[in-house]
Length: 457
Image (tube, rainbow, N blue to C red):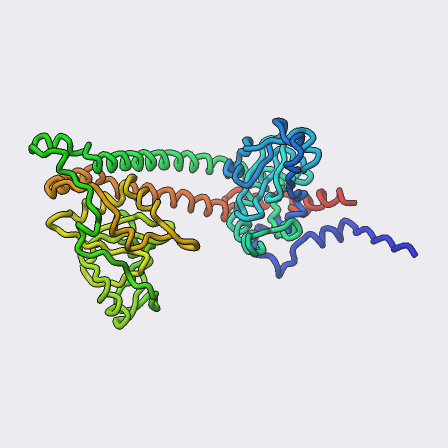
């Protein structure tokens, strides 16, 4: 007996199915906006990769976008790989002005294609339905709500995945058509100004960093103090290649048994996350009790003026001078170096360890699997060039003056963070109807939704 055909839904039934129930709405929006689902505002296409075994699929006709290409953001044009016409026929054709969203690995990275092309299977594409503003969907997917929702909806196994069926069921905000355009116009205007400001700040920061690296290189190859040596009758031959264990009184690290630590306690507990080239960052410091501290401090007695050096993990190679007078406990991710003051200036050692040449040499000696690290043994036998103590002091004096703008560089970093926070704030307000663009007299978005859904009939 033949299966009965599934009855077609009426337009009213389709609309009722598309609208998010009142008690499921994530938050309130203006009364003429509606909550629906991604599949109601756009067709979702998941990319695919044509077989690499067939060279005819690859050529120069269509850009083949991958998640890394989405770094272009609002203007995705260039790709590292291209498909031929045969390749696009085998894969998925993506029309220009579509929103591309990474849904495997780096969940939520968003791009807007300005050209026809194709994508691999890591990307879900939203092609706007009917009259819905294509650019509006791009800005919507960048909003704080959509970003959080995508990340929380992904299934994490070895790698995070947000598949098509989950993706197209995510709740989406649909304002009236005129409001969609006003949101797009405002986003383009505001983000253009913020992007320009960010570009200027980034350029200034990179200029400072490049200048700093060049100065540090000159400092520890003798070039920076060439004139000083000439004036003081000192030969470059006075520079010696010395192992750290020869010029330090003590080289050790913090505790290898991480103690219980909390926001309150008896003694500060310093780990790699607190060590910056500019000093010890106490903004997220935790504390340990007195008993645990005494046990740690007995082995690793950090004192004022000692050099602290990150030896484990991604930030290995950063050195700083301890400027804290009170005792604190140290984790094993940080090494303690106590210099012999008759041979070595502590600040000279700090600057040297932070120089490009020494840092790259030290990092090349790291070992380990899950966490790479520098062993104390390797730190002790590491060698640096050491001039006379007087020349060390001169180098430190010059570097202190030349790098006095380090605080300005930190301010630039803070400014970058503020710009990024402003973007997030603008996006959050835009999709709550709080940007001052919404007109309550606009036709209710439910009419636009009906028009889009009518195509299903």
